[in-house]
Length: 283
Ligand code: GUN
Image (cartoon, rainbow, N blue to C red):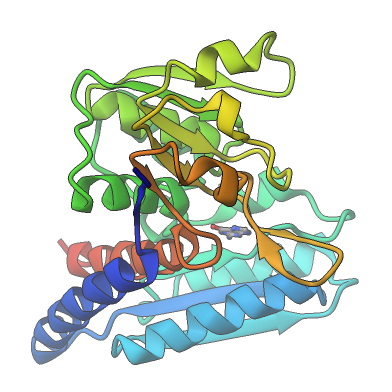
């Protein structure tokens, strides 16, 4: 038996066409959803991500404004720009691409974004709302993982879910979303003792570690749904995830590939958050 390969590319296309239809309805009411993206510096991966976000917005019929700033941009200039976009009626979403250059204060930047425009769901108010079960923008990557699981028919209610990784961007919101779906959730991390003992009990295993092929076959419960959030570049230039796909695929029940799994879903959820911010606008 081998796992069902969860096709994030196909599922994200489906979601993006659903979003484009909702955008068209909103445009008929005179509102064009708009997303502003700020990129500071020359990080090559960030440049690719931002270009993909811009393209996806335009394809969905949304307005896109990308502001590229030099590496040495002072904190005050960035804060002033965020303030300007917060007040721009045409931009319903605003995100600052991470990571920022080391001299910039990321926490201060994220706090400055209007929580209603925070389509990344990174603002403390939105992270807190997720914790309290209130409706608010949710971080795109974990939201995308939940969509993949649900649309693939994985039973979440009562399942043992193990998240490996505790970042604010993925691990923590992922755990909250799985809890919301009535999973029994464990968060593991770099200091976890006997990691394998936890992962072997997981019906749903989410790998967000940032280490290539870290999750090996002996760590996976037969039949588990394995969601790979990792995007690592190997010495030969190829991309690979945090899961050893070749090893784990024969054992798992479901598995996401890298590339073509979680990655495309992040953009689809960003479009969804932007659309919903525009739908809420003025209410
Ligand atoms: N860098 C890597 N992933 C993300 C993301 O989802 N949002 C932002 N703003 N930066 C990122």
